[in-house]
Image 1 (cartoon, rainbow, N blue to C red):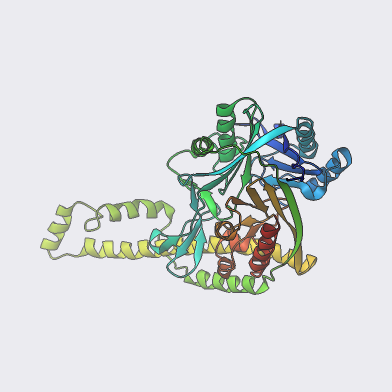
Image 2 (cartoon, rainbow, N blue to C red):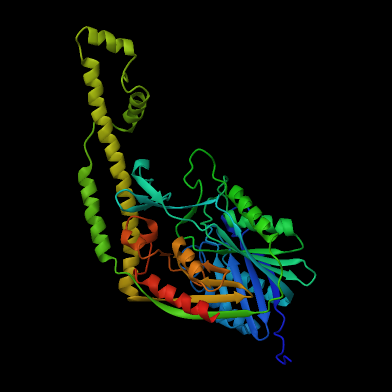
Length: 483
């Protein structure tokens, strides 16, 4: 006879509040702070998602935001600060100044609406809306796809990195069978924007709206950003069509709905949160900066004088590409000239070709210089932090288990390979990884990617030394074993 008491029912409540910055002009679609409160016996956990680029450091949310809401929730609802998890979608939407107050309100509303729930855990798949933005070059270096500088020439690109097409899904249903909330984890930078340029929650905002519209019954969809440090939306650099996040968001939302139809409910009552503080080494970037500045001088010396300017280059390159053999005039003029023993046009074309090649070389050098200068500026900013704040940085690593749904979090923009590796090694089949959570420490690339320091944003806009990865993965392994 089993005399062990049954574990308490899992309770959940969910709420959302608009956090759009109304002073930023008319918005294309609303930005939200969404709160999911979970309770099992004496354990309460809070998951908050915000449509913002980050919850500290960059964007409009103040660095005191996380501490403020945790303090308020402790005072008002007696919730352990270590069990409050806040994830930023990393969209570039502009949020209201009183976001802390509105976030607390969302948690308060969710806590007041607690009901018994069953859960469903599963995965979806979507590989059509994202691409790895790091380009492996034939030189052995890597470049990245940004608006801040030009792409490398196509002939220099050897391969691209992976994406993570898996969608991690947690569904919470009321006892009536109606869906209370859907939590989904996916790795992509939601930074495509909308044609109007207005404020937007971007791809994941649209995906969440698709889910909520189709499920109805007041269900709330919460997006949790994954390991998307080097994952862009497709068509990010498109100049032939207006970039529209709604199209990609709709695709993602429909893929989640398809997956939801295959997930079965389970009366799982397990709820556990483990929060660990981890000291990571900061990077001393002085040698990297000096190396890049030396490379910068080499590129400057490669610039050649040329008779052309932009006004003369454009029509001339068109003529030479359109008709390489007879660029200056029609073929019959060349044939007449050659028949008379004259080489005037041929010599003129040869001179122009030399000028074109010199101008094109200058353009490629200028593009390299732009990339180098942009990344030097990033590294110099972080070097100032290194010299002022010391050689280590403290971060939170959190493990959350809800039934068989397992989530590990980190405040950096994790490269996708790190997320894939954690999933593969986890003892839990449904393990998912969230970046940009409980703080923000910029990009956190792999150790191998940091060997490319200065050539891409991820390895330049980075506070940590290469040893960070092993320390983080070791901590995650221990947390996963304890969950």
